[in-house]
Length: 162
Image 1 (spheres, rainbow, N blue to C red):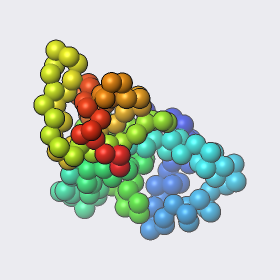
Image 2: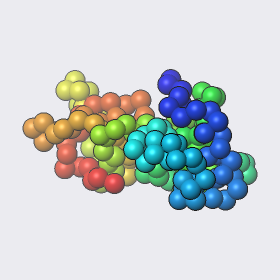
Image 3: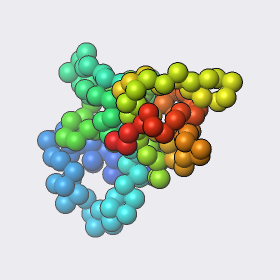
């Protein structure tokens, strides 16, 4: 698993501390130095963006509530099973397996009707409401997507951009 490296640990810690203090991203951007602010504005993916695949209801006060499709900024992935992330003005821990990385050029989709895929043809099954990600273009009405550990082709007409 790739660890967060793009921003220095000091900058990441500063962002997390400012969120804990109740600040949103616009306020945090003002708190960062000019060089750091430019880096963040020029490449938002330096913050390691993920999308929530499933609903996560907090069990502890430090947990981060998530709904499918929520965008998560990864703050700490030093534990393989539980990561710390930020959604809007909330920060907390969530199961790593409940999120999928969104890279430059990726599109995030929600399946709007169940599709039963044929494994022999490289297709996957998606349930209605399931979140998936793709950085590829459509070919003959199908697109290759990923949802967690599952990867394969689905028809474009069962997906909506979110």
